[in-house]
Length: 203
Image 1 (cartoon, rainbow, N blue to C red):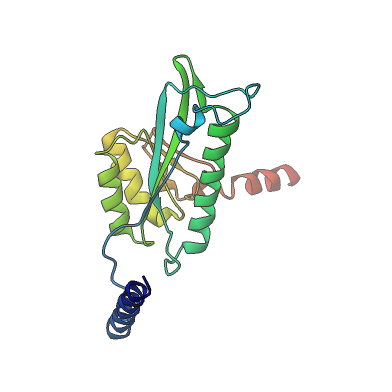
Image 2 (cartoon, helix red, strand yellow):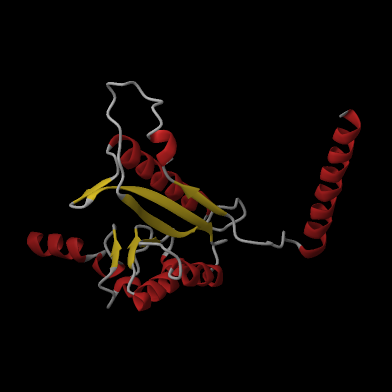
């Protein structure tokens, strides 16, 4: 076992040195794929009798899938805000699944599944992820941080007829003409509207 452990350690060290040499030569760590994270509730364990007999159990008729790109790597331009968004979504999914038994519809309760993909704070990667998402069984597309990254995502979601939630975007063109795109902050075109109304009232 000791001999095997030494070989594993040597392999890991060699791999680390190779990555370091790549970084030194190119100035960046070239990605070899897109990091994805899936978050949901385990149906089997939820119904396996692990809870107290008097504790209510959740029965799900199906799953509603939310998916989108986020800046998840520490070198990403929008990493700080992107990870905060990711944590917020994760908290929301856990709370709704665990304490509300999912989303209640006329046909029953539906669990939420969150699928996130690292966009590397890059519009091209965002387009790649968005194009792939519309091909998969994703019901609602989520946008990460910034209007710059959300705009190509909004275009693809609009063309495919997918619902888009974009809490990190405010640029008016992101939402203009897209009835299935929703934000949570006022668009930039309305930033000064209340100030103008207030000044008009004073004068």
